[in-house]
Length: 235
Ligand SMILES: C[S@@+](CC[C@H](N)C(=O)[O-])C[C@H]1O[C@@H](n2cnc3c(N)ncnc32)[C@H](O)[C@@H]1O
Image (cartoon, rainbow, N blue to C red; front, side):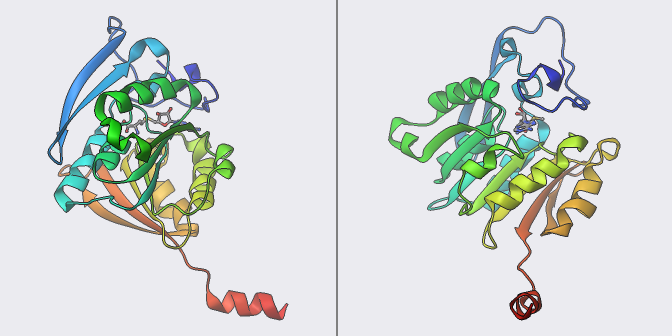
């Protein structure tokens, strides 16, 4: 499967691990355990949604990070980009957040099914699922999120400017962004974190897998230099 099968997805390259066996069933449910919750996550292989129908290692690593840091999202307004199956965003709801899970339009049914299977009715009012195509749709969303989440969303080099624009538009100086990524040099993932995002954001690694392949980055928008404001007002 390639990302080009996805409606509106950039098709400049495919994820390197998105080839699967030919005889996959249409749907497959697996159980993931984090923070005391058993999450039933169904992957919809029949929906033609390519990389979105996998639970990527970076998603599992980000959930482990929440667990190990005992992170809670109570009272926090959260948005997840490229939710895929919804594993990360669903855990954020269960940990108390008011969470908007987003992805390409074709992926939303899979996310909604997983939300229904895992979020108790009393907590559904804190769960939204919306289409958000990076570089386009973020202008319809506010910029007062406390937290932005994304796992394995840095892998399409041609889409990096749209992704960075999206992070800029959705965030303010108090927003904390957690991105979890496989550091694939061949896809310029290290360049994204070292050279591109650092133009506008401060970025630190807060967790690294034992093989150093998967990193969780904590990213915050750089405050405008007060000197720049003075320069502007004098101009
Ligand atoms: C590698 S998958 C990761 C899915 C999930 N976050 C995980 O880690 O299991 C990348 C996700 O980003 C989404 N995506 C790719 N390009 C996108 C774009 N331009 N706008 C919005 N979502 C996009 C895909 O549909 C997919 O769900």
